[in-house]
Image (cartoon, rainbow, N blue to C red):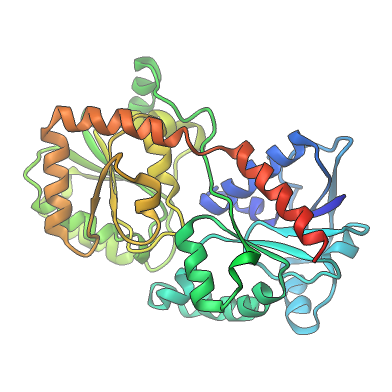
Length: 373
């Protein structure tokens, strides 16, 4: 069966959860070879994403010369061009993320979260307009199969859009083999590269309101520890208040912003940290928590939305709206060696339950179901 796969998420130069989900699943789909894949990308003015699987017996690159804005505008206004026709025909179109798309064949679409519906105040006016133009309601109701990355996201889809449960599958993210405990030499190299302190609390994720980084800074001020706070992640949107909170903080000299770091440095960065704190208000899944657990780093995470599914009893779950509770968790994690060791051991065991190969296998089953839709 021929599957058209929209790999436009790979055009993002800073790989985040959505683009890494698309990249890893596409690689495993190509490796398993159950179907023929046509990788679609309107890479006008840019090279085809180099991370994509190379052309092979069952993989073809389908590049178009459409400017991205023109393609999106035509799809939004006229429902054309059809992506399956642009790649020479396909039985199923797979969208690894919500995007402008039209097709003559059945579609399978992944939903990573519904933060834009649940918390529109966390998005800029431009982003809210873009979401309306994509018309998620129509996209999901027309889809043959909808993929959710967690049970929480599945429940959100049912409640928000009224999609029948039997049309929704759960395909969770996983972590690649690079995310594992690192030796002292690699940790020292990353510590030197980024000028990291000997002991630090780590936050890793995009800087945006939903992630509650300002709340973490407030909790860090209240915590009794003298450990530093290292904040890693690219600037998303509406992030000025985060830097303002850090600049006003009485502990500002111990707060470090690294920006976006190279993907290959992340495993050693996790391993260098005393603990990861991920106090997001809302997540569809929560990749940094899973990555940290795979590396043996103790995790403190929000009990909100999907993070409880990811972390389970392998870390400390906190109320993201309560800085005092976050501070309490930080102090306890750093002071209790037995707690850290328990979280380290259980976290690695839990992370091992997630598999990209299993996810690719579940997607292949969804494609077969969609073809009969």
